Image 1 (cartoon, rainbow, N blue to C red):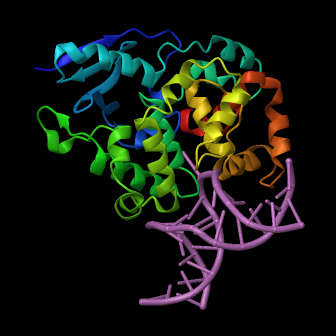
Image 2: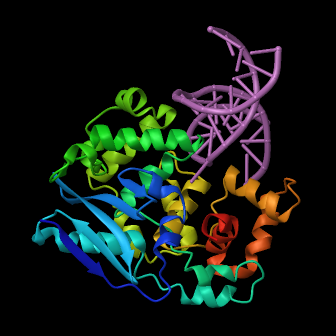
Length: 297
DNA sequence: GCGTCCAGGTCTACC
DNA sequence: GGTAGACCTGGACGC
């Protein structure tokens, strides 16, 4: 029998704006049904058990329908709050852009909450899979990781469900050849093996970055020590950690800026930095909202 | 069918 | 610290 978990959300939370905040909803183990507006995710509740949950919003209440047993519901509730950032306070950000031309829509649409995974490890692996390739290839790599190394979901209709995202231990159990041949990760393969081994062995705990006291600049340097993580990847992950100081510029973001603010002409990154400088610690989020307005509005 | 380019970059060697 | 070249994949495009 299915369980319905109800989660409280603050007044400015918007389910669709959060789901559409960036491309994560297209990466397994997320699955998005835009006809019913349900976001499905396969939650890992222990090392070898996973359950699927359908997440949606109804009358201002976020709900999760799942076949998971009652004793793991708190895990699903906690992860859902994290995924949708239900406890993020964006009031300061909304107030700072209330009078900014071109950004007044953000607060009205409840935009700015960037969808994320339940673990920093999952977001880190996915971010590496976005580097130097098409979005189609990113989806292929992440899909292969989940299908070939992830834990199968329990419950009825298992065959139609995505596996859970693989654990660091599962990812560390295969070699670079597997990542090249089966995951299609190419030159990223040894980076993924090294990262998985480092986390699985306990030498690195990416989850600790969520509560790190380090200034953003120092934390960025820590993250960049990982192979395969450069400026873009580190700043993208920092945004998912809730730190928006960096713009996480990549070729797509640059091209969008050129079209919207520079007459479709290329310019130096310094010009882009200057454009959003007034937004202070929120500049990365301000730019992201500015560039993705068409997705939300 | 084939070759080339390039996409939501990063690493290493070299200067 | 700045820069050039190499690194994988796969879709788009021109021929």
